Image (cartoon, rainbow, N blue to C red; front, side, top):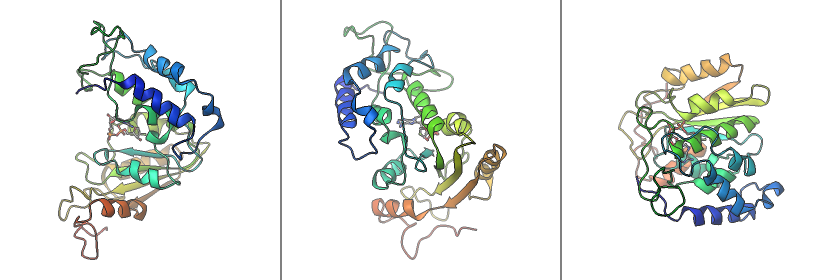
Length: 273
Ligand code: AVW
């Protein structure tokens, strides 16, 4: 996939927006003093002149410690398997009760950008590749420059979460709504703190855009990988709840995909059992 050639300017501009609280997000006084030039420099520091598939786990630590992801108690929302149409991100944006990674300082800066390190240089002298970046796969490019960023930022998001937390899962995901190899399964769930997280609420959402007739749920709250996740979390001593098609999300899906057969009084999904 192509890269974001003006990434330095974009990161700087977004840093200034966030630090000055221009975005309506919960905004900490601590962030106001962030030096955006230094923050952007530290963003690149650990990846310059590096093989884009051999990024160290800690490559972004200096950056992430300057602008750590923080969320208000009781609002942290994780998501997995639902990236296609940005539903959790958009719900979180209009709902102060929910905060996703993309609304935190580092998540906002890096959202929708593409970048990677380069060992051979490409004439810019920046040690980055401004032409093309390798796609992440566990076999060919496990420690991908960009994947390493989201993995570390996700870990910090989970570690600092307190109060009730939420996770949005796709009820129609092939292979199961809870995917064992996902960031949520491998990094976020294991880093939640039993002493401070009061409940994990699973929000199981159908895909209103794809809207497969009579297949609103491949899995429900009481079977398959979602049941497995509930047991996994309960074994870790978390309180767990699970809700199918919660209204907070359903409304936005119907606003967006108004002709979906899952919307309206004649909604043609399978009845929830
Ligand atoms: P997935 P995961 N922007 O749908 O549980 C761009 O299976 O693995 O869900 N790419 C991202 C972002 C982001 N903000 N976040 C993750 N990715 C990548 C962060 C990730 O490398 C949030 F807090 C993965 O390959 C969610 O709770 C793919 O997008 C959780 O991690 C999504 O795979 C979603 O990751």
